[in-house]
Image (cartoon, rainbow over all chains, first blue to last red; front, side):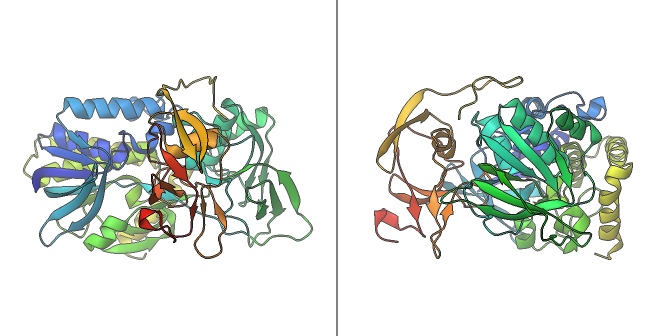
Length: 360
Length: 105
């Protein structure tokens, strides 16, 4: 049995943000992550971040992962890697963990859940064929492990991840046949879409996948045009020879621990699915349990760092480490408001309104 | 399938080791996920599904989805997308649910 002041599940941008904030306030922090290196999904993000200096603009995700992890070490944050959080039992305050093959119990006085999100699937015949990969998986394979996912890729989804990963594929020497997007417009930033178009990659809006073919692995994808009700239009089919179909069709919050702990959960489509109700700090309905990052609603890494800092500040204050809380929290809330401003943040704002208004 | 030149990244790879895939000798880098070593050698079918015996490759690459389960050193249901490669490993395609001790599934 291991007693700690603050336990954080997840060493991604949100978890490390929470750990750093809580440790800076003076709390003892233990971070638990199932990967063998810290950083979560930052470790595969080779693009430079936007925003302000406080949000590490101009720095690549992979470098931010190392920076955050180093700062956490300097602040005395303890980190268990290769450690999977299995369950949290509020009645006796026990968090169970499998760490390096051993079963361990942790009793934190405050707990921050920052488990991130998982990739969504798309329904079509052949979607289980080897060669149909998530966009995150493609990024991990090529950017972390240095292996090309294939020779020729068809990308599904023209949100930021689909556009960025398409560009990264080309950087790695892989051909991108096209990007198809079921919505009538490109969802990602124009700067990313323009880079692809300059390289001659067609971005086909109002198009989706009809079926994937091949035995035993993918060799052809049939696309088709979709109408305003997202229904395929017969006669508009086109076949693409490709050995990878990359799905970038959104993420869903990883909320298993919060369901199991008994958090009040609501379905908010704008946030990616079921998410816990919470206050502006991320404090959920379960006493002593905070949520941070994509686990509380899918956004992106900069806001994950910010919501992480808020949760870390909140958890530390809960334990009595409240020096300078108001000022620090105000600063993070201002950052978050800026990140969520404008048309790209409209969906998140609407989702949070529904969550807070209880209409979810 | 290895990326040798990249405008941004450099890959710090471990030492080269030999392992077997369904009895065939392959090479990979120590410590990389087994799935990365297999993919680099062109192996994309890792598993056959329990009911319809459909071929499965990896999908999420971060240990979440269970699409990449294989039999490693007689242990079934190993998530090869996150399991580090060790010299001399015996990696086998998994058919169905898998059974402990290498018995029928």
